[in-house]
Image (tube, rainbow over all chains, first blue to last red; front, side, top):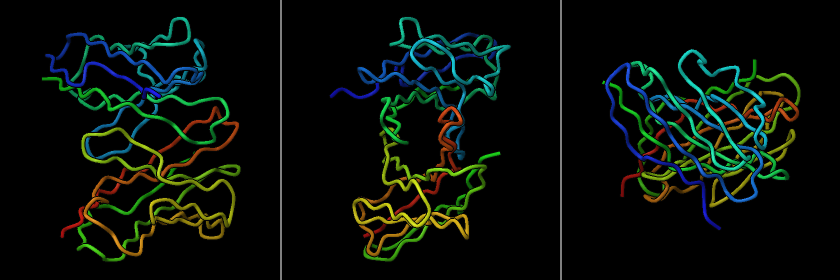
Length: 114
Length: 113
């Protein structure tokens, strides 16, 4: 079974530029999460999708961050314009309907904003 | 709100030493508790879980017991190996609360031969 795929693995941009991250969850997983992990901290939930609908985006900075999950499969997280404090690893995770607590994570996309 | 607090790292141990990583939680309702592990260069993966009070989760020689009276879920291993070097995250989820998984800050463990 293929795992959660994310790209790009690394991205370096200047502040005020834009960036997009892509995630392909495990096949059949209805729930998809985007987390932000700043160095030395635990993952912080940005947005949660159930199929193609948003379940929770209360911690997403909507003035600069956006995310979509068209067709309930792949998802894209965009940051525009980026700030220095957005430097972090962006983690995508997915979960099947019957799995209690087990999130499957991708390897993450590391963003550096200069 | 729901949150977990982990002991700060990093933790450095010699091979075959005993490991304890402390985790306490704050939650409304009845959370499920988890330990995730992140090996170098890999994504987070579930290590073990416990879904109700007094449950013990175990995997790969690691154990953690869900203690409601002390709101704790400490991770233990009797004899660590070099291959256990990783970052360990305590996490909780309150069922029905959008299944929102909350993570601790992580504890980096280094095991030396």
